[in-house]
Structures are given as C-alpha cells and as structure tokens.
Image (cartoon, rainbow, N blue to C red; front, side, top):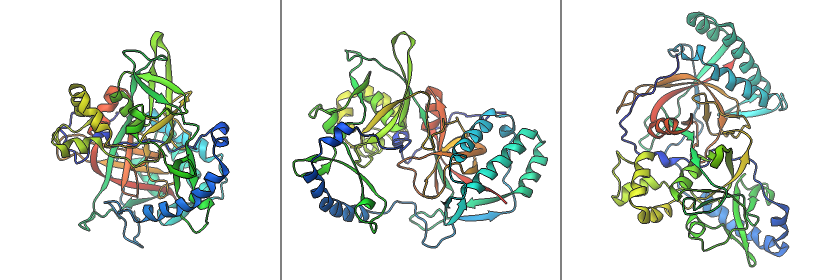
Length: 431
C-alpha cells in the first residue's frame, strides 16, 4: 500500500519557498574564464579571504543546535511501528540499488563521519546489501521485523535542541521537481533566462590558502585588483550586468525562475514535445533569503497563505511588488543540462518518497534510515517508511533536518509545499 497524502491546512512558520539548490555538485568553470583572471588579482584575493573568513565565522549560529559533546544518536531496542507500504513499493529497492552502485565505487576501507562516530564505507554497503536481501525475500511483516532486530542496530536522533533547550523531534520538509514550459528563444511569452555557469565566477577554497582555515568555499569575481562577491539576484535580474554565460532556456516569468532556483532542478517542456532535465551547477555564493517570510513580515501575505501556491497566486496579482520581493533573496542559481533527473548530490537519480536530503557532515551518502511522521497538528498528513540519504541542501544543516523528495509535477509540489512536520528519524546500521 503506497503512502496516502491528504489535504493539510498549513500554519507554516516558514513558507514552502524555503528550498535552496538541491545538490551542491562539483563546481564547473571554463578554462576561458580562468584565463581572464589576472595573477595579480588572485594575490590580492588572499588578503580579502582572511577578512571574509573572520566575518563568516562570527555570524550567528542556527536556531537548532547540538550541544557540545552530546551523543547525537541513541540506540533503541524496540522498533517503531512499520506499515506495509515499504514491502510492496518497488521504489525502495530502486533507491537502495542506486546507493549501492555509488558505494561500490568508493574505497571500502574509507572511514566517514556518522554523527560523532566513524563508520567504514564497507559497513554501509554491507548494511544495504543485507537489507536488500531481506526485502527481496518477501517475508511477512512480523518476520521482517524480527530479522531486522537480529541483524541491525537502530539509533534514534535525540540531540535536537531548540533555543529553549527543550528536545524536539526532527524537522521534516519536502521538495520536488517542477515541470516548466520553456523556449529556446526569447519572446513575449518567454522572457526569463536560465543561465549556465558564468566564465568569471570564481570558486575559492580557503583550505588551499592555509590548512588551519576551515573547509569553506567562497564564490566571487575579480574587479580590478580585488576579489569581490559575485553579482546579486537584483543585479542579475535587473539586466544591469551582462553575464559571460550561456542562456540555456527562457521561462515564462520570474515566478517560474524562482521556483526552479529554489528546487534546484526541473524538467523543461519545449515546443513540439521536447523534454530536457536541468540541474543545479553553481550559485553566486550569496546568502539565501526566504521570500515568503519577507512577504509575511511586510504584511502582504498571511502566514496561512505563505506556501508556494499562495506565493505564486500573490505574485501573479502583484507583479511589480513581486519584483521587489525577489530582491529579498540575493542568492542566484546557475544550471547545467542532465540526461535524466533529478540527480542528487550522490550522483543517483532521486526516488520519490524514498530519497532524502541530509547534512553530509552528519550522515554520509547512502545512509539507510527509517522516517516516521505522525499526523500533523493542523491536518492528517502522515508518513512512515525507509529512506536513503541521497542529496544535500543549503538549508539542511545538522542532525535534526530532513528534506523528503516528493516527486515530479504539480501534485508533488503540493505535497512538498505543505510538508513541514516534526517526526522521528532512526538510523539503521548492520551489526
């Protein structure tokens, strides 16, 4: 039995357009772009980086924190209630096989961080292989549970602490792949550009300048003899700057462009039935700002309507004001074509309701988990099932955040836009 998703009347504290780019894949830049950067400009960059580093590390910490020396995961002996949906869902087997294919390409003896402990790639791979073998046996639910207890360890994420120092369940949000009409040519009906990575966009790794500096990646450009932040969304959307980048496609409006930027990937539908997948390639490095939250603060949108459908409706009614609202999110995304999609940060194509985005500093790619979301306080949306860490997100930080990939198209977008629930997350490791 597949999960059932029913209408939920939201009272979101943060709107659906919270998503930033989905996959922080390898940065792409052309040789022609690098050749334009003067050696003198790069020398001056080092001094700027030190100042920038001081600024970055002095910024406020996130709302949800993990106490120092806290045990991130607590082993549990009693399994959560398992519904039958995962036994008949072929998507779960597909997701496992895709994670296994990625893990098989890595050095099996490599140790990766799993919370505040270490685990080898070999152990992660062996766990997925054993779990897959159990699934393919088609065991009755009770027998399946018993085998899980015999062969696996379950750890619950228990370290989520809010500003009031009270333990909280994991916060689960959703994302999806939009399907958007597009054109190869600019016209009256298609006026918003989707850019490839600009030739003058620099990627700067602080650790290359000094091993004592954190592993932090900055993005900028050379201006005269200085390295400065890259252009903001307002500068790019206004047309005041001409980017040295290819226009991959033209979308109907800035509303469609914003949705693509937030989700980080999409399926573009061109005239005469042409379909092409497009995916995140890089960003301008600017901080993300929630447009929905900004609209609520301005009093232009109620909290109940601050989900993606509500924002889209308001934007169509107030196009000039929406241009102003766009500037509340200075982050801008650049794209590349993909043969299929959406592709997660692990390189695997995501599976609806089985692939999740998690913080790679806490959960390595391919981690198997069980996610339980009880009925929300404002509706009857619930979910329980096995999921795999196959993606990342700029807003998904720490052990207490999970982003569930909900699928492709409008219905998936409706579910993702309404999903902001507290739930329980269980990490599964082979004994």
